[in-house]
Image (cartoon, rainbow over all chains, first blue to last red; front, side, top):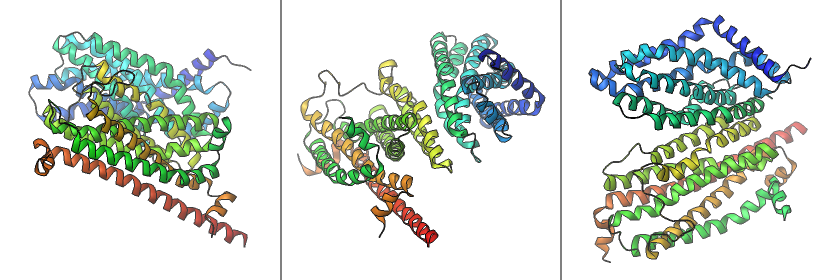
Amino acid sequence: MRVGGWETLGLVLRRELVLGFRRPDQLVQPLVFFLIVTTLFPLGLSVQLVLLREMAPGVLWVAALLASMLSLEALFKSDADDGTLEQLVLSGQGVYVIVVAKTLAHWLVSGAALILVSPLVATALAIPWSAFPVMLLSLGLGTLTLSWLGAIGAGLTVGLKRGNVLVSLIVLPLAMPLLIFGAGATDRAISGTSPLGALYLLAALCLLTCTLAPFAAAAALTVTLE
Amino acid sequence: MWTWFYRLASPPYVYRVAAVWMPWLLGGAAFAIGYGVIDGLGFAPPDYQQGDAFRIIYVHAPCAWLSLFAYTTMAVAGAIGLIWRIKMGHAVAAASAPIGASFTLGALVTGSLWGRPMWGTYWAWDPRLTSELILLFLYVGVMALRSAFDDANRGDRAAALLAIVGVVNVPIIHFSVVWWNSLHQGATVAKFGKSEMPGSMLWPLLAMLLGFMLFYGAVLCIRLRGEVLNRERQSAWVREAIGS
Amino acid sequence: MNSGGFWAMGGYARFVWPCFVFVGGVLAWNLWAAWRSVALARLRANRALAMATLDRS
């Protein structure tokens, strides 16, 4: 039975979402980590509200990056461990489609959760409400890009036993431009200047990653799984 | 014409030829670097604005250029290894990584020391410096990824993929001074136009650039032999080449 | 060009000379590390050769 590409996408996507929500602790843990890390900065630096607002975008974004690193493990690892991933790859539906479905599901689950929690964190960091739209938009674009960069990193390290830190080592340098523009956009929104330039660059990065990363991630899986 | 290319894919050929080329490359490098250092340090006139501090360019620019060149070589060689499954491609990539990483470090350190008297700071988070730092992390990532695999084949292919993904950074570094208002100065040696630098300052710089390239070639030749041995350990020709 | 002035590098000596020394170190390290990696490779190849001969005997 030849299943079409879109059908495969839908099937795998649904499977991933169901599985993702079945294990709520895997969902919640990176979120809690996100909350804790953002709390660490003001605690460690004991700054006043005004200064806190200035460093808030950076803190928010670094915490989001680190939390994403944690949630990456769920992307391929559990399926690789029990052999499901190999079956999916061998199924002939094309690694590309499977990778797209899994990464999209990963973003919908972890990235969206991050975005939903971000207003709470932003308030704790004294980010004014006027900056929220830009912050949410930049986080939306940013977490999507991150999911894809993470897919490449996870794909490259899926077979390794001690691959956890290595994934971060690979993905975080690639994510640095993202951090610069994402935090930059939010920063500009807070200070009142136009965030458009940074947002455009962020969108460009997102577009570039979304179009090219699936190929890289699919190739990574093909290399490491065979 | 293509036979030359095909021969490069042969491990015993590479093993033999690398040993032949190395002394010439190294000798040429010594000559060019020697001339560049002596002329650059001793005879080139001091800069109008920067005084004698500008002489750092004679080590900084070659390091920076080589950091980019080695990474690009690593990515291209890795791509050749991935696409055409030519193991020598992976060998060149594996050999280039530590060399390139050391030059990236050299560029960062010399740049930092140059920045202190010129800009008043050892470091600034400006686009060129930041992206060069990212390049260092990418090098480290590629080397770490390659060594994390028990199966050398898989390690080579994964590292090649990562190198290709990261090659996006190279044009960013190069054009960062054009695209952004960077603290870092613009292009010194205009590729296709006349350079703004006077000849007495330019020639030693060109000599250093050439010298460092030749040096890279020489070290690559040395490392390649090791990489070939590592990948071809079980072959018959290796037994004859080293067995005694 | 007086020799005292040469070493002083117009006052920038403490920036210029460390740069050259560091890069000299980078070049030296490259040569040493490359040589060492080949030596290690030869060692491993010899070991593999010895194991293979043992297996056959």
